[in-house]
Image (cartoon, rainbow, N blue to C red; front, side, top):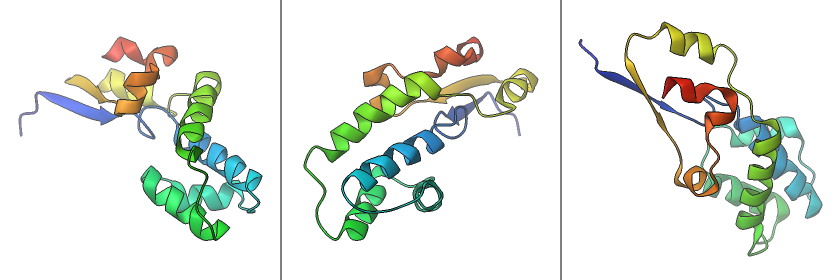
Length: 126
């Protein structure tokens, strides 16, 4: 096959956002009175949609989440991303080894919040 480019997803592929998001969800869930560990959150939430995660948390709590939970989660997550987001180990070397054009797919919320992999010298590849 003759490829012209490779498209990468950002979250969990280029940068390690999963562990940060799970930690924020764990903290917020525990603030509401449930007790879940970071390990449980990573197990249940990694690779899942936010809707799935929120539904799971509601089932653990046994009641609906506060109406602002989603927005508060996004706010706290982006704060943590700005402080702790790191490239996936080995991604620089992988991108350097490719002989193709490379594109990155960002979630709409990242574009709105300017949370891009620029802080990790990954912009050099895009």
